[in-house]
Length: 286
Image (cartoon, rainbow, N blue to C red; front, side, top):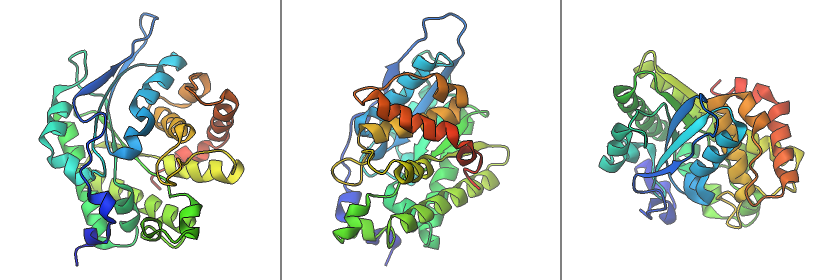
């Protein structure tokens, strides 16, 4: 039986989400001379929910560190292998940003069940690693210096295990095991991508690591949406802060002040966790 037959039915649907087309979020800094950064997101509903690419743009813009140009191609339940073979995704990758210049960064997000299966199943790991390696090679054809950011996802909410939900059980015996699998799978995928593309600039953005840490420190903060799988707005802001920090550094996290519809006090708590634990960034991909 192929490993993907273990995926729940919902995870194989091709539900097209906002961001399918070449939708670019235009954000320009008011100050002259601010360095511009062009970021393309390739992912699925974890990236599409709450408009994560636009949130990253807002955070970068408010930090006054970088002037962002944001593009995205997001399809429900998509895997990296599917993005690597999708003509629309590849056309957007080759097209570049809205200012006509090549992308500087591509943020890629693997499907969540595959991410966990790959931590224990060799076939799933080859599938995930192969998809990432293809995207790295394609990105370097467009821009040899492009930074490829591997978006490490999070484990589902613990309530799904208490309810014996199949989609949660398929990722591990509990949230800690699911997270450990996801983390290992991303480490191996990046190592494989670098081995197959010598000189490539590929990093893990430890989103899932920070989700676990924030949940440990502030268990009452609402990171998950009601389905226990996708992010609530605060979860998307947390994810965006980690990704923006992976791209632009600590100053982006320190100086950003965009909070969206979330209570500023909640966002400040999340930011403090990131700033107090730089070792999570340093250990990403290890």
